[in-house]
Image (tube, rainbow, N blue to C red; front, side, top):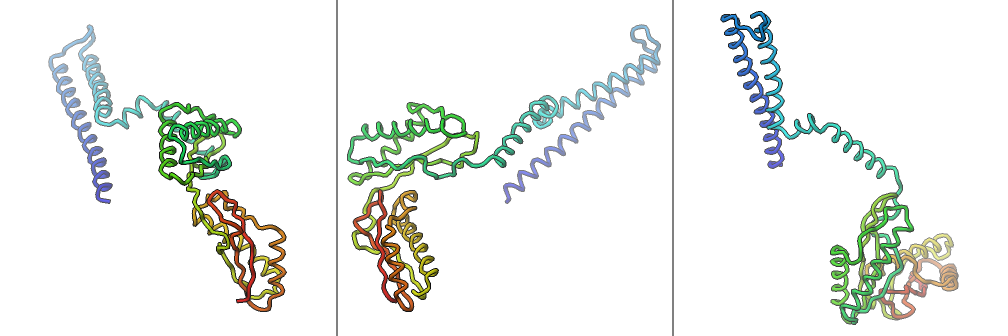
Length: 308
């Protein structure tokens, strides 16, 4: 706050000093012009053979023009904004028009991809491979994702996989993968920011450890049902359980795109509904891991129902 106030005072003082300087310069020139006019009048000097009266008028007009030129010169010297306004107005207007057009496009055009949205299915990269092998695979993935820009209404991605910027990203990703040894890495290309129609194609690599999340038989999530006889409440509880399974998996380290659709067969779902409707009073529905579940998935669970 103090810094902003000081900056504002500095800007205001600079403007005041500029005005004072202009007034002083204009006054000095006007004074000199007046003295010269008096001198010309008293001595009845002539210019180009004109009468003294006309000569005096020419001197007065000339000094007025000099005042205007010096004022412009002083303002241009002390103020960058004034120089731009005087000599770059057309360029400024064009820049304003371009920025306005870009703003309107961003506000009106729909988002093609949202920040963090997956661009391809996940890739499993072994951390036990050599650094060169990991970089080679990530380079192929980088080039493939770059080429995907041709399938969307965006500007083509022109950064070459061998460019310094691309190499830096690939080497950083490869270094992370190697650091996980012996655990493999799950690599998912995602949108680096909201990508708009006609906008730039920006992406990055989201990486996860392919670690064990749940052992077989471990409870993933659970919900309570107030009255098992209420079929609509039972179905709502099972839908809520599906959401809870996904949230639990993400919290344990599974990529969101892999945790979005827990695998529960229709037979298991219908069996859970039947068990609930056969239960009098409150009940608890638990989602249990069908097998050891790693971050790469699948997120497969069976359902158990027990009275509360």
